[in-house]
Image (cartoon, rainbow, N blue to C red):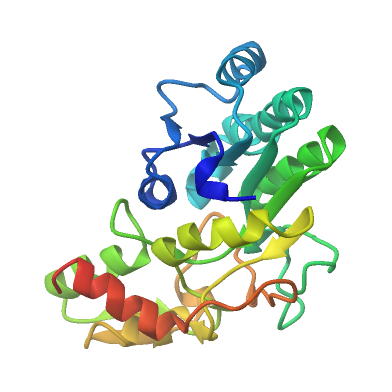
Length: 269
């Protein structure tokens, strides 16, 4: 299959990941959340059946981890039931679905997680994303669920942008040094999808290579990061200490340090 030649629909096209997916798939039909409300089953079925794509890439999600704690119903509608409706529509027309999940489906009790490890979320965001995985698996067979972590990209709020802003505003930027994961550049991830679609259906872990703490990540691009513990930086949503995703099924992407250099160059920093 030549992925670029088949009719492709991108949902969540105006988000950080969606923006780079649109660049990677320039001929795709692109819908934002204003154009398609994925929590509306009738609207989802009508739109996808009318467009009749062969490949649907769903980047629509409620990704505010703290916000999910406050707006739990919205989180489960967008991240849980919405993907189920998309999968139902894809199943009706025989389309492949690519959907993005998260490292936060795991509890952090292990240092690394492979695709077959049992999920056990510890916050509402993780629970809602796990529900989305389950709804897709219940609704269709030809899916690719991609668990990703610590996304950064030029088109949206992310950790890198937050740290750069704080670094210019305050003398010391406190960053937790006891949570570990794999930073992932949205450009690299978007360009990996064509390769993924050629592989068997299932769950995949796709991140940039290399493991670090949030503090180590921040220290690689700002000079005034100061380490602190999670206890010193309390937040509403509990975070896993370890959310390192091990990819066992697809060729690894470049190291996050290389990806970060490309990102900073793109941002003219």
